[in-house]
Length: 444
Image 1 (spheres, rainbow, N blue to C red):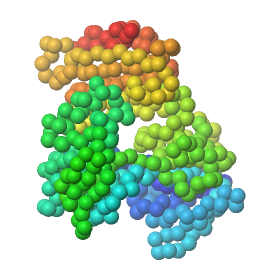
Image 2: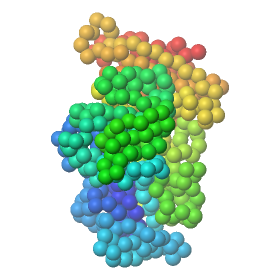
Image 3: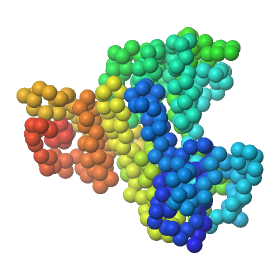
Image 4: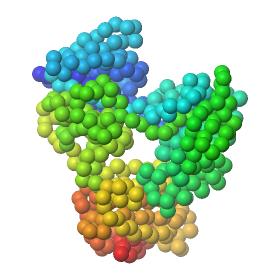
């Protein structure tokens, strides 16, 4: 019987814990987490804050009680302060200041990520919030209830920033959305798609301030404004949604790390030290799109990495099959999904990318109800013609289609292989010459 210690119990940690507890009951599992809650779905914060769901209760899918009922020992609100890798033990401190020492045979690090916070004046003002933890959602929700909060600045137009901009606007507040890039969602999508999202945001009275760098938050006892390299704007509240960085200070200098500081792991999620695993946002992934190690912080990747590490720590060798970074967003009903690389990312990875695109309605024109336009772009490598990435967008729910392209990237399918792919036709669902077929057929 082995003693496995798990540090961190959000998505990756919960997946690892359940894998061990459900499949390897002969092992002892000890869990440490610095938070007071487990498994919060941060991707649902905007739905809660925007009053699109009844409340936050459904955003939790595990708890200390659930894990302890499976025979885990769980230390909540207990921060691990030091790991002695040589002696295989760690020292933690609970919220009362009591020191806890624990030994281990195998160790799983699931310490997650931390919000990127710019080094600017005014961060300590009470109306400034980040967006990651349940407590952050509580703060944002509470501030928006206050009548004197009229105008809110959201800093960062990635997924979380755009979702929160919509949520805050749904609460009847004026919203200013700031972004250093010249468009929203530029990490995952090409301009052909982001221009649609920018228009939707603008049409819903969200003021877009792209190409602006925030330099200061103004105010004495409360937020009064925000200053960028292009102007000074009166606001009552600021939400920071710039992005995240891996939380790896605990083992700094002890484990091999990636360029951004994430723990570098192999396909078994094992770090540079045997028997020590890293999962979720604190660790790297293997990207099938670039065929190399990468950092892609997504909850789906975290869960899969937790399953892989759980089996390996439990005693069953298992390797990850890699990831494509599949993702999606829905803003005011407009759905955008992508997987793999967009054009800029493909060029940065060293490819010479080509693309093919197509736009048409989901169903034949004679179908009048529930029939929206769909646009698709498939990015592929000029030399090998291997599919590198795909983006699809519509008011139609086209989300399941992206999984086909995720598998295509994983299996190194060429754009030409897709030209005669067996896709069924029925007017209730699609067109005989549907957008996937047409994009492939017209590929240069």
